[in-house]
Image (cartoon, rainbow, N blue to C red; front, side, top):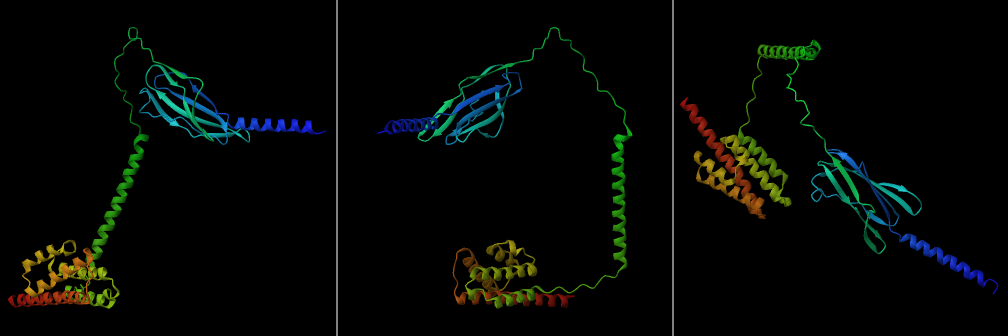
Length: 327
């Protein structure tokens, strides 16, 4: 009983401190806003400063200036970052600066700027205590007493050597470079003319190149490892390149139908045309229709490519022999 009164006083003090702590946490932020300067001329810029003192657990959002909804005479030039200053363990001061410009005279009001804040279960919008205003003056021109002068002709300044010396030096340097390049070119051409030309190596016939590539493709065993698309791509590329070298047709850039139509003027025999169409058709099915060919298809396509090259090679040799006999 001796300490019952002391206990009661202690409990009252503790409850009071807890109540003050809770009240302090729920206290809304303090907002200050100011404009510098508040009186200016047309086209001048002014600064809007906003300061928010809040609890560390509170969340706030600074005003957003939507230029589409602003007065047309006002324009947002720059929006600075948020600076944070720690005041105590529980309090921080947030600062943000906006730069705006005004392009018409008059009195403008930015009103009470809204600040959104969130604290525990509270979501609310606060406003600055003072309504912000600016006064914009214009320049006064006395048209009656203003003297009007005639437009003066531009003054002719003498041409100084220092103004053209740089151009002269660059011109001389460019002339030296051109002369040096011309001299090197002439010497190179004379040297080439004096040296005997090396004998040209005979070009490898198109059918030999194609057969070599076909043999190399057969050794890679692509379709045996289920790489059908790559196999048919390589196979038709070999044939297309052979057609380009053999007939001068841009077969690498043509479709299958365009290739067969272009070869009609060379009057290939029926078997050779059938082999080529069958090869190109099977290749298109595999590459574009995801057709899985059989073993027979793969072997037949390879044979079609080989015999197409071989048959057209024989036609090429026969034409050359006839040409030699005519000569």
